[in-house]
Length: 272
Image 1 (cartoon, one colour):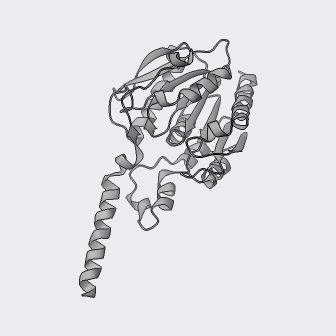
Image 2 (cartoon, one colour):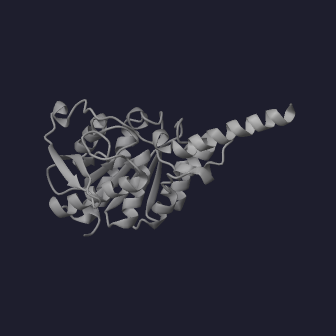
Image 3 (cartoon, one colour):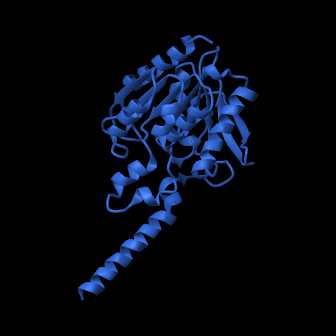
């Protein structure tokens, strides 16, 4: 009887481990195709931009220019929805006199393809090259900014390509680190095929770094932000905001806005 029970439990556990191993894409990426709105609804002039990745995937992006020659933010969003769900961020950044290029990853919005870790890196690289090559923005004016899932992508890009600054917001040290906290009963570090080692990437970035994280974050604990800050090289700054994972940047109001504004001014004032 006990042997049968043990075999049954072991079998169920094995099936759950297999499901975690095979179903990671569905646990990490939640894209939607329909665009619910555009920056025009906010009264902002914008352009549809089409990017080509090195592996031949066609991506859709919005380019929202700003007057003057201040910083341009390459914004890499989180794992759900698409660029049309980031209008509050676009409005905030534009209000700080920053230009914004916001691409949809492959499989999101109007972008072709299916999302995966390596693919999202190539998507970020295509957006960076579009800014520098097509739009003629100097690398020193490009601020790479990633929120949640996008933090790991942004950290990778800043480690691989020159940029003026890096903002990592509400992000994680790595997907296996976070998964081990969410699924403590499973050997997720061994099962993980999607890794996004953000702490390792941020350690290689050679630009000013701003880490923003909420102490109230219910999805990615504040300690992840602290560890990302510890991993980054100087000059760096950690700003603790308040509010939930998805709403913190709005709930924190002036605290958040002033931190981003100060960082953008720092990049604008830097030599080169």
